[in-house]
Length: 357
Image 1 (cartoon, one colour):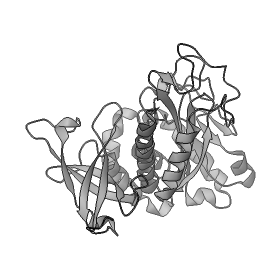
Image 2 (cartoon, helix red, strand yellow):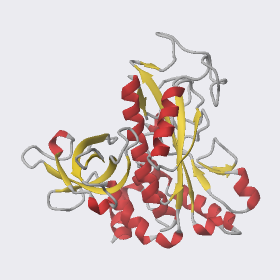
Image 3 (cartoon, helix red, strand yellow):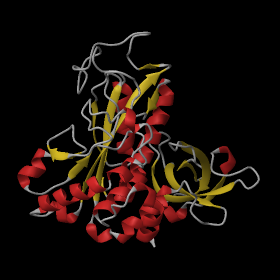
């Protein structure tokens, strides 16, 4: 807080851009410190400029739902994740968090945990960071978890991002260089569904914001470079209390069977352009197929070796793309596994109404 007792609150929200929402943010000056999310006022914005309203009726409302310390501005300044409501107070069509909130409440007794592995690729101008102008680096192989200036690119940005997430109180659990040069990953969780989703969106915002200082862009496109290069995913680890208890492997296997029946519906909310990534190559299962297996990184669902050996634990859904909306992904997984919703994609509106009513 400055000498006048005022703080800067950066309001962050998802816009109405399709097929993939973009992050937007703006700063509000608030008098006094903030101790609870209820202390943060609602705020309006021009939805016609964010693809969320028409110009003749453009007012939308930002509803604060989660906040963290602002690791960039420091002090008592904060980052505020918001839901978007229409002027009449109803959730906006782009407000996917409101749907997850209802689903999470409905299945609260399942004690669902999620851990999300966010892959992304650095670009500077038209080229991935570290790639030669007009050419290609050496073939994939030495870059995954590599070390050295000839094998990893952008580590200074990654370290700044990790430190900022920790200072914000975000449950970041690790980072690593990925298979393609210029590509990295960070992990959030395990956390309950709303929190892991809020923190992933805020962590993405922090990544973009730090990238501004380096004149580097981080893209979440699932196939940022065509050809024989790995794509970018957001592998989503999931468990319920029953999966984590003795004998939970049976529950996990049953969950895999449910996910198989709902495969088409899940692919529909797992990120745009995912067909470019899920080809059956580069540690993926084809988007047209579904299979699960122990320690199989070419499967749709991987059961980790440790889970198989312990007879309990979690599963890893390897289908979500890097640009996925975690609110939608967590909603879909909980509806299928906890609610046994395995209807096809064209039944989605009716199914959602049934679950959240």
